[in-house]
Image (cartoon, rainbow over all chains, first blue to last red; front, side, top):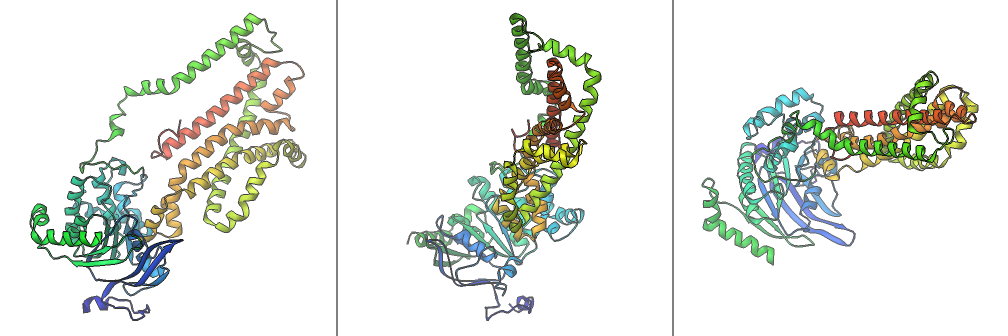
Length: 267
Length: 279
């Protein structure tokens, strides 16, 4: 991707990392005391791809996201995000959407979504002006001035996703974004998220314990083992776009992928 | 923030608007304040009856009716005293609120300062104010200053401790998320930590509001020529017991009023506060 290459800031020492990768892990390991969370992770995530990471609970999935985001340093190995390797530089390139929506009750939905702009020194009125069009585009019109407590779970997650988007970072890290939703709302939100991600191309890393969700939302699924988390399988996902959710989920390709992922999880 | 997630994607009906139609309000007040008013009236009535039946002399324990009568006849003495003490309480409380919030913020922002000052802060609370008060009077004289210092000394501690706790107990996930959203130390403080800690600051201030009256009287007892504390002190050797009680009634009223104002301010400034804290 030559177009992507030129966007790289030359000021950073690339240390020979694969410049075409948005995120690259090299022998990454992290322990908390006696507990080894992740071990020997080698992984390369191309630009503007969508990767789903599935693994059992407590398998170090969230740890991986925190390491990528520069909120945590690995004990061993190196992580590159867009060629940058220091924690501060990684932090500058990643936006994190946590499992709980964590919307601030003292801000309206609109002001919650625009908080990253205000953090960058943009005035509140300007932040509102820039955030408002996204509310219309992503099915939140008329809910701009509503306080988060008055929104439903699905709506709250939409606002939380827009908030992540408004940080205008190239890498989005989604940590079980729909884990707290019921299955019907969840299915609806998955469709919404796919459309949203199609509209705004970013490198997206999605962590989930739901194999089906990972297959639906990403173009590549990485299966992690139970603690200590290691990569046990990488599955490229290429089911045809379009078609209803039912058609996709019941297609032979999808069923086969799901079987492979579940098998990898059991191993 | 409470972590409750609703199932439907449709927006919920606003609870706030449906509960605000005027007719529900008087009833709400009745259920909220009714029991307290009732028990107070019952207590006063019981007190009155016991004094009557026991023929207790007024200089020993005055009955509520005698106290009420005294509040009227002694008003010329009590009114200026009330104003002096009210001033001490209000200014002292404001100083402690400003100092308390400021100190809590400083201690929160700097680990070094927190480590340096927190032990001193706690140590300062073990110094008996009873002993300190006369010394302050020796240093600063009979004016308002030593009273303000004593009120502030008693009041700022619960504000600082509650504030520091509130600032520190902000959800770590929230702070991490803010860091990935261009959040600097200052913007995280301004947009997340401080608003999140406001309910804690207010609960510290509510405690402080009840201490302020005690502080002012303490200050006056240690050396003064006016104020409700002085009136009580002067009335004691003359066995003007009803006047002492009248002063106590006023003092309690001031403390309750301050408490009410702080609670009201909280309800206006922190509408998102968890229910049950502001009463």
